[in-house]
Length: 134
Image (cartoon, rainbow, N blue to C red; front, side, top):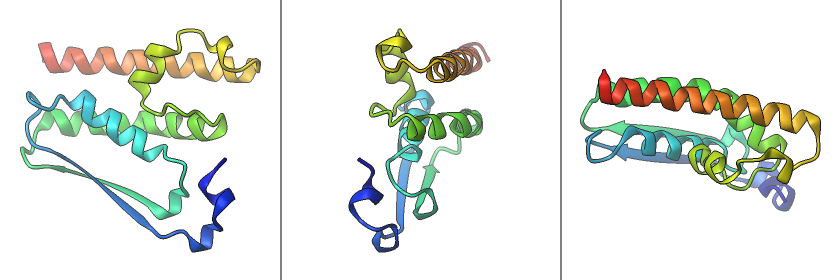
């Protein structure tokens, strides 16, 4: 059940979410971006939800990770909302859900799930390559 099913959307307040980070070594960017992606996929009207990231360390690595995450979010957020995905942290979702057929029988779901998993896997590979070898 969606929040807007319980409360009329007009009555829901606008919500600003802040994610802070300072050091990409102590706070790996993969954690930050998974946090941001899960917040963007919340069960809340998108026009009333804003997510801000404050990087006190001004890390180019965090910037690059968030830039890539914004592209992934364009696929991830609609997928979560369309299929009422409860676990909305991509890293956790794909590591615990290794077989899409366990969740949905729809061929459309399976196709989207596989496309997202490959995109997520590719994103993680590129990110880790950049972080550790870059």
